[in-house]
Image (tube, rainbow, N blue to C red; front, side, top):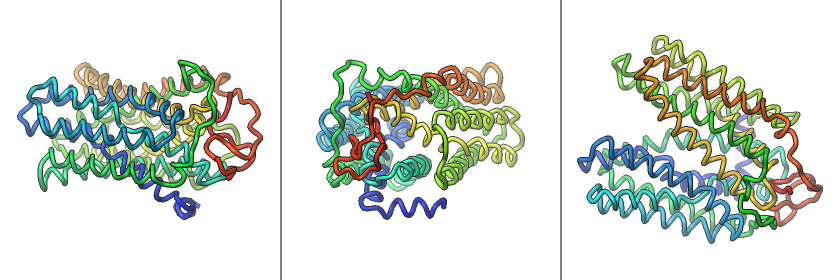
Length: 420
């Protein structure tokens, strides 16, 4: 089925628009780190300031995603997503206007931009059941979503560099963030987004985090994030060893290609059995794919190893979406998906931070070992928590409608974060 299956999904009314709008709306988030660094360097700032501003943006984004996700569950998508996108873009406008002087305003600008980044990713996954109906189609959409993310995170930085070459880093930031607002607008004015309502939720300060299964999944994907984040630094160290900066681009492109191939294959078929058990297998293969990178062979062989290392990333993410859907407490689906995004991002930041000292202490091999250790740790968490993950703890969901399906389009028994 493969790409043909994805084409069938995209022929469904609203599906292509929602996916495209979400990807465009998330461009600012996908390109912020490199765009901020380029802006600071163009302003004459050092790498320390550039890295600090990018890190502050990442932290603010990690805090804002679940908070805004909870707001979406409470108040609906249009009332949260679009205002957040506008505020985030205004933060970028402030950053471009003030530059790095004074630094305090620059930090304030990136805090606003990161904190107000709209949770479009979680919002899209909350919309799929009402748009696609049957459970198997929604699961395939999760795989398509993971593949599309790989494309976005590959194309986004290339777009930034093109805009910088044509104009300047400031113009690049403004254009991409204006485009992001248009993407968010396209999503929130669509019929599915306007009609979507979360199920009534039990008042609880922990929100989605009161689910033990969700906590177990988040703990595992923190380490998956560590693995992926460490590879970005390890790839730079490997390129330095080879004396060719272009090698880094080849390695990252190979990881992306592997993820694309894995996502297409994973989404091409229906999978039997519990997704929690399937996730353990996929993460085991993911960890196994990272370990050979420590061999650091020649460029051609290393590029091939990176393709293999990337194959199971998109399937792992797609399967994790299903597990989130099964374990999210009733009325918290957008927040739960946003927590996965946040945890993955925090893990990537930790992996980046850990890989640097690993290079200094043990060279390139040690930095790639951080990736392997992250994959193994993620697998150990899933094994240790398998009993918690095996019991979603649902109440009765044998109804035609779900919290994401006001019209009753979803098949009977298909919940979408719709549990006690």
